Image (cartoon, rainbow, N blue to C red):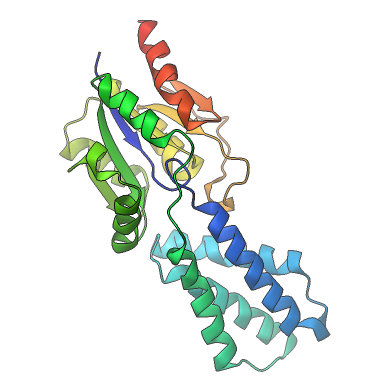
Length: 245
């Protein structure tokens, strides 16, 4: 039985979080240097930035401007807290640092091409459903050579939630009982898929963005719900489920 398989992009097919973590570490180093007289710790900076970052994403979605703005907002928070004068030069540096995350290389996860080729060869229809700035996401999709697998079945949304997923399912007339969502985010991939009654595969990563982490315990799957640790496990996992009947 042929299936419709929706893949997330970032940290499902290509690396993403590790670049954000790298830039966040640079940000924290700058902050602890500038605020050294106030004994500001790296842990405190990262915790406050995470709080500001997540709050902003929930409002504006995955706009590219949000990430550098979250650096500036964290800087302004501590400047006000400690009575330290804000510097236009420092804010400009933080803005450029935040934007630099979108200039990193596009690095596929192991077995990306083999996984997609295997599923396509089995006759399944592949879809790509990603959150982010359209221009940036299109650039990454092109750099990773993914158009050949997904063709016109590529969906980029600023807000990736139940409503966005339902719109895709409706517009493409996808059968719920034959559709899968595969991704690393509990918030934007797994829970919306389960809410829509889809099969879901949670690709759990070792180090995850706090925004993506939510409890799964209360979810009630209507179909398959699998947790895997490697992209290369996906084809056999789907095949095994379908073989059961």
